[in-house]
Amino acid sequence: MPKEKPVSFSGIQPSGNLTIGNYLGAIKYFPTYSENYKCFYCVVDQHALTVRQVSAELRRCTYETLALYIACGLDPEKNTLFVQSHVSAHSELAWILNCFTMFGELSRMTQFKEKSAKHADNINAGLFTYPTLMAADILLYQTDVVPVGEDQKQHVELCRDVAVRFNHIYPDTFTIPEPIISQSGARIKSLAEPTRKMDKSDPNPNAVIYLLDDRDTIVRKFKRAVTDSDTCVKFAPGKDGINNLMTIYSCFTGLDFAAIERDFAGRGYGDFKLAVGETVADALSPVQAEFRRLMADKAYLENMMKKGAGAAAACAARTLAKVKKKLGLVLI
Ligand code: ATP
Ligand code: LTN
Image 1 (cartoon, rainbow, N blue to C red):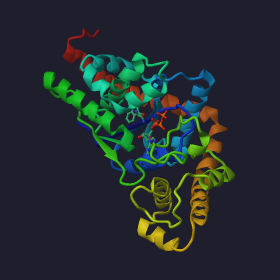
Image 2: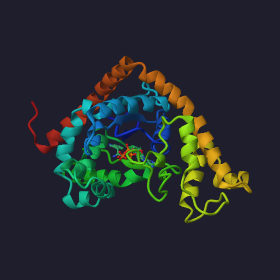
Image 3: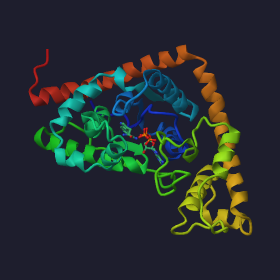
Image 4: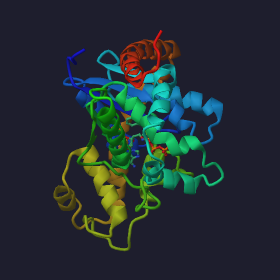
């Protein structure tokens, strides 16, 4: 069936509270695709199982991630919002793609190497084949674009390689997707170790600004953010801490670095950190209010999950049937 519009697909794990990294690198841009793309946004709960989860927390985070998608501006009438485990085609296609993905390819994935180092006691097969489930998410919807933060570029490239390999053997099966990485905010750094990415599963909560942090917490965390011994607010190589704060401030205000440097000329880091904290708190306040409103209405969220799963499953079933037929699996 020809597409009415190109397709956009992205996913977020319900593996903890979302951060301003998730927001600036990904979610903030999602609503901008609604007009020109048919959009699918997925809470990838099965991906979250690759590290040990507390069941009640995973359940809570799944509702919260869905509510945050909407609170950040995604209109469920214009986008298909759904939960991965509600559409069984994802894990079915993932198995098939496992048989078209090489051990060497998966071994080279940076996220696998980092997560294996972090969870040395639980280097499970799911962590290793994480990218084939992600490829299934994307390819099931004949996706054209995948808006993600920079850390996911390698996974989308692997997905492309697998799709090209499959199409080479079984022509015209999958659309080949493109990653779209935002110009700014694609890699927000930790406030405690500004050479590392801000991660929602960081054990140090002071390193991370969560979308649901209250105003005082946000201001306090920015005040304590690691910078350097200089005092001048200037974007420069090696000043990772201040560069990160300038990037965050720029993303929330729309000011470029030169304008920020002018505004803070002659003022110290203290003033700048306070301004960043207050700006971020102001920007997140309406998102938090909308989030609270949505979380108070579980019936609405559950209804939306069902509607989203129905729409996604219908689309996914078409691709899965095509794949099975091409492979020679008997359809009944
Ligand atoms: P985890 O710590 O559980 O691996 P995560 O914080 O990396 O989670 P994901 O759910 O894996 O978050 O990612 C959701 C989206 O947010 C992805 O598109 C990812 O690229 C983006 N993202 C995550 N962290 C950052 C960051 N620090 N800067 C910019 N984008 C980010
Ligand atoms: N792997 C991604 C989350 C994710 C995703 C996807 C992103 C799972 N499936 C499909 C884009 C498209 C992550 O860890 N951030």
